Image 1: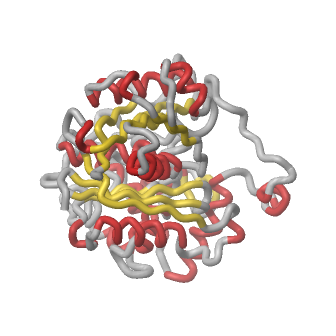
Image 2: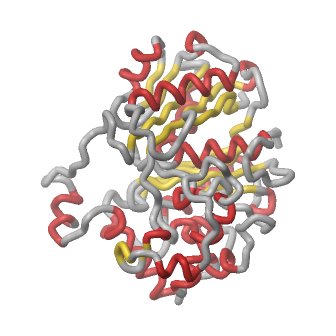
Length: 375
């Protein structure tokens, strides 16, 4: 059975949305995705989402009575997991059409859950007592070790933000569109060494939704799921086996590429979760597009920028487009747009797009191989 994404849409706006609640963002995205697919809520018999509100609350608000639910919550990669799980459920006959929703008032905090980490959690016991204060101070561990072991210069780390801003410059929906230089990045405020402000993701509001079903039920421009993979590394960053590589990135990618029966040469377009500037560097290496220690120079040479041979994060990414807290939904949305030929910064001739999601601080990962054609 061929599984497809039959509908995909974001909220009407992304960015600063103080007049939208978290629930409102979920529902707006869901309505937009249904309209995009040419479907109604009555076509939906499966529902997946993450966080609060959860799948039961979303289903009730939409007036849907699902036969299958998925509330898998593994950080920003959750939505890629949901696509994979929905495909398995449809193939198993548990449901026919799954709606996956995301809504997050990450900046305005309207109807959002309170931040907090229990003192009895692994993070609360083994990392917070040593002075960490959120993702910027945790992700520094990996970035600094990678820089030390591979010799990555800070100028090449800054090039990640520069390259992605080139794409955002072409995207009217991107929060930051003005072109920047390496000098601009290094002159921006230091957040937590080695990260400057422009090497850290945005904090925004927004949402998106997907409709996953079988090919025979799709009513427009289906995007085929050729392969998928999921994996986990460590629940806390200090316990990773190796700070310079993501085991979860590598394993999920290998699984997705094997299922899709593709090689790296088949990939026309790539989306890699970019909470911080070093994450796309890990993605390029752990997925096998370049060798160890080569990704920084690869990006600096322009290969991932407009006109390059491996277009990467073509919406501007979490560094320049939007980042509500869990970014994976937006990476999938951009891959779908590219495959449909509808992207703001459209890459010519995209037939195969790979999406890599990160959850937590390299804790989880999922990879999707999407295409506008069957192999």
